[in-house]
Image (cartoon, rainbow, N blue to C red; front, side):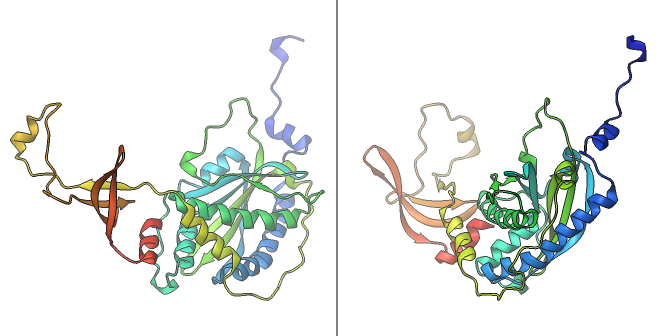
Length: 312
């Protein structure tokens, strides 16, 4: 045998022969069964925990290489890379950003009728914290639906924006996957979350319907409180702005290292403290030991108003 008569093996054919690629009819049936589980089970689960009026339904599936499917989701989504022992070592959950933004606004007290549908965008750190909780609930339903041996809990990776997804390992094989799409209606907003799973895993999976479908819905309890507490624990970068004495443009252009610009206020120096571009507090400038500090004198709103400002 010479190099002239050696031919590369067709990748799709090899994947089909080794059980890593299925036909659309087979994959579609599994995806539809999984979508039905989410459609029947997840609304009761989320509504009983949050008190929010949510609608969920199966929205079809896509197939292809996993990297291409993730790119197809676009930039305005949050992602989480997950694993479930004895089922799949690498699957991904995504959710459109408008659903997360709206859900958080409603959980923090905004009435549905006052919310305008937000445009897809990168989520803030606090919003990603909320997305992580949503991903945990989705992964929990998925675990029940695939009935993996051993009863292990899914490991849900940190939520991140699509543009922050790390570049794939050049040595890692890009697998054929299916993207199961589920509509998620939150108040006036209709978005989509998706589960991307290697086809090799799906072809070995039998979908089961977990018990508890149709359970009584309760008022907003543990999960909503968890969201609120997560928001309150999130770290926020504060910025202090001090007004300096006015100078002419000519004087400003001539400043050199070592020159001093006085504060505008001659006595108690006023400091405006901001976060995410929004005013939070009026403070006075001071010092404690070796560190410069600010002392809060007044706020720009109530505690709930400050939370609303910080999370948008």
